[in-house]
Image 1 (cartoon, helix red, strand yellow):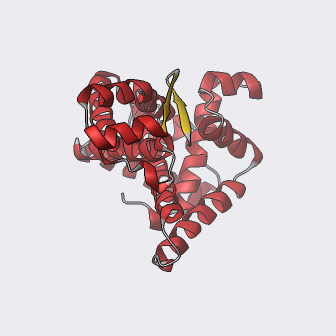
Image 2 (cartoon, rainbow, N blue to C red; image 1 turned 45 degrees about the vertical axis):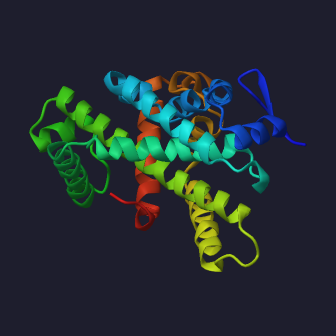
Length: 257
């Protein structure tokens, strides 16, 4: 018999079996309380508190609703760990919710596109990337305005990267639960996505790989990474943004922009 220790409580197969038989709402609420941490962990992992501070309550409520759906749909007999299954579904649902809320207005997308086009022109002419003051002058914006545009680009790239990882993980989870009679092309796509992500990260320079690894896989915050690498938090933000831009270019055919 398998058991999951969740939120300090043990939700074993017997609990799931009883809930499947009775559909008792009190038992469902007990399971929900044990696994509420899944919502907060995913919100923290995606850095949504700082990106969407004003909407975080709505995002949290949406994640909880999806968690309830996961509890109601979960089939304990299939041998999939509930926390793995629910974490992937909750994260995907939150990403869909943010998408539908039009989290990046058209004018912001336009400004980000203009900035990247300006960077490309400067690089072609001078064979180097522009400094922030040069870029601001070329775009005809102030330093503060350029900072806001860069922040918007970071937000866009963060969620695009999270969506790619979610896509790969969710397909991998489905494949692991499918019998040998399943569709081989779906497993091929999941494996290819994982290979592309790993290869793209490997092709980053050492600092970029370190930041991506510490942020996405070790769960460190920018301030903590800055301490580890002995640089300023603003420098970590720059390295992170540059790494995401490179990753986006390498795996753009898998992203829905």
